[in-house]
Image 1: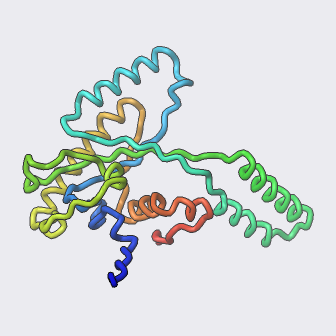
Image 2: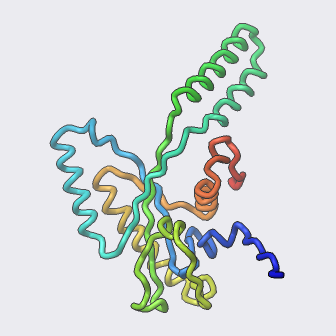
Amino acid sequence: MPKPSKGKSAQDFVPIREIRDGVVITEDNRLHAVLMASSLNFALRSADEQEAITSQYQNFLNALDFSVQILIQSRRLNIEPYLETLREAEKQQTNELLKIQTREYIEFVRVFVENTKIVSRHFYIVVTFVPAFLGAGGKGIAGIFGGLLGGKKKSARGPAEDEKFEEYKAQLFQRTETVSGTLSSTGVRTVPLETQELIELFYGFFNPGELERGHAPQIRS
């Protein structure tokens, strides 16, 4: 009689080896940095401004000698933290009329967002660095979010254990500075995600329903 196969843990399906010093190290031993980018309302700009932005974006692409990945994340807006703040304000309100108005406002906002299904969007740029020890025989830069949909490729040697990690990280961050500098000319601001922010980001990818219900890990002090 064949023995039942042992179930895999959730971690077996996550192609992330480690998140360290703001760097995501995947199971294929590549290093990734994630930049959060601001949005830009292109449609509201004048024709001259649109042309200038397009030209600067072309310059941004032409300045790159490495691959980047651009991700747009859409998620239903979670207003529970805002509503909780209003509930606390209602409890502290001494004027009965204002307390009633606050309660009615809370219910209005809750119903409005629930019925209209407002979506929030976040923009990310993933910058990848491939350590030299992977050699030219690698499969190229698949991108960290693309890798989430593929299988793992484990290696006995990883950059987290390598004595050159700081060197690899420095080269990765040089690339992020190039991306940030060239994008700033288009009016798009970027900020690199730190370790705790990266943990929260990937928690959201693997637990989208939890974030929509307001259940996110409390990782910030």
